[in-house]
Length: 93
Image 1 (cartoon, rainbow, N blue to C red):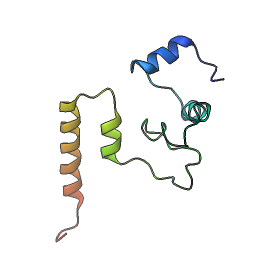
Image 2: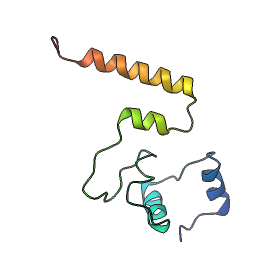
Image 3: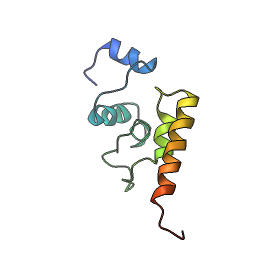
């Protein structure tokens, strides 16, 4: 149904690789009878139709779901994001 190799699926299951296109993720969601966005949101893709919700994941959600980061890398990335966000706030905010 997905037209991918068994080794590709095995790599996804073991977190050595991710599906390489949003379309493939959306097809996978449908094949597994998941609600639109169940996987694509975690992988940083927007679903084609998620019951009207077309908002991207937050930075925190994206960092938390990135399997390539360990807990220290997540903490550092979120701290940098927080510092950058504070520097962009209007004065007196």
